[in-house]
Image 1 (cartoon, each protein chain N blue to C red):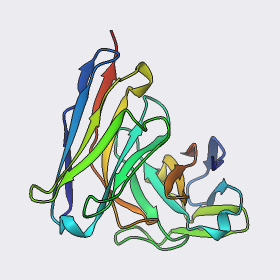
Image 2: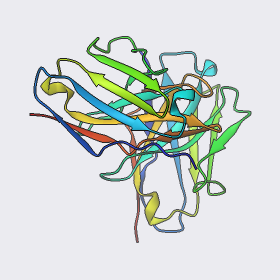
Image 3: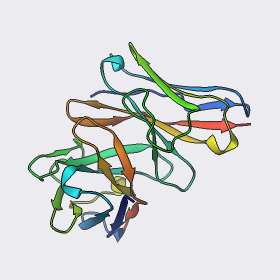
Amino acid sequence: QVQLVESGGGLVKPGGSLRLSCAASGFTFTNYYMSWIRQAPGKGLEWVSHISNRGSTTYYAESMQGRFTISRDNAKNSVYLQMNSLRAEDTAVYYCVRLVGANAQLDYWGQGTLVTVSS
Amino acid sequence: SYELTQPPSVSVSPGQTASITCSGDKLGDKYACWYQQRPGQSPLLVIYQDKKRPSGIPERFSGSNSANTATLTISGTQAMDEADYFCQAWDSGTVVFGGGTKLTVL
């Protein structure tokens, strides 16, 4: 069965950095785009970024452009999110999500990892 | 930037039909998806490509999309359907979510 397991969340000070990881299993990783979606406490869903199946193409939400970097290691069935210059408003649960393809549905979600940006 | 608008809340009696709308400019020209999120859980895809149900999603969940509005319909609503529902579409290579609708079954 499809499993997506995030790790790397935690408490970080404003201006700090954090790297999230997502380990995927139960499917052919190289056939799928992968995405990060976040949800601030008590708020809705916000798309962060996604990456093509080979890692050649990446997309970012405007507010994350230049601060966040998505990458993947197909040999390790893993996707990552490097987050720099973190702000209080980046506090959220970050979900790793499988994307069937460009302009397609987000069909499997991980359990999420909480990132808290606070001094 | 593209926006999707949902009503903040919808209430329905058990066994009745619940309809949740999602509005966006020419949304009918795009595919709409719907996600269910129960308290404390991750979102779950319940409708994709406007009206298709993933494996394991009950038949009481259905979708439609036309003109500027996509609609998620839950027939014979059950207590377990009480959750937040989010619509989603793509615009210019980016993922857009609606603000979410809290469905209360009472």
